[in-house]
Length: 257
Ligand SMILES: C[S@@+](CC[C@H](N)C(=O)[O-])C[C@H]1O[C@@H](n2cnc3c(N)ncnc32)[C@H](O)[C@@H]1O
Image (tube, rainbow, N blue to C red):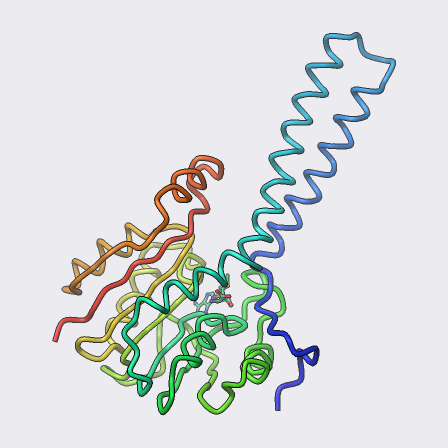
């Protein structure tokens, strides 16, 4: 029996809480400095305006990034989940794996589309990647969403999946693989995803960076019908304002028969 989430609403958590905290604290500091400069009598008029405006711009950017990260975790990711899972032709009997399931976002979204199938989530529960993630938190969300009997959670590393070859009809993942810093580790995770997929199985790999790297690697490994699913305008804007570090989109691909 899960122990969290008694209010009747799922809570899919906040990603990268350390970075989020940095943006809000640094933004508040920059805003304070900007106001102190603007209202101080120590500086002349021109240095006051230049200093105040520069720190004001920095504060706006940092606080904006913080707000945007919150929006990403709490709103954007949930909307993207529905759009992405709707791209899969579900029969209801699928076996689905969610790689880096966290508090169960994709896992539960997939489970809601199943009738006789099962959705399994794996994670290492790294708190720096998502606040308060745990198998209990994921199970609690599954309970709230009414899919407990179709969900299973395991603790495992995505670079070494504890499943036999050709186990899953679909592998889904959201904002998880980029947490592996080394490209070779990300490739290990992709190799594992391909290994556990059944022939003709589909992978829906959503992330905030490295999507082209994933698509190229899938091609190298013989996956078929590889396509990038994104919102082109959102992609351009986000890449520009975050210097390419945060532009969610997904790669879809099939394992050849
Ligand atoms: C940003 S969170 C996203 C969680 C969830 N997929 C979502 O969209 O809400 C990334 C997740 O990947 C997990 N993770 C990071 N490295 C992992 C690894 N090597 N194996 C399994 N999970 C990992 C973290 O613990 C974290 O829960």
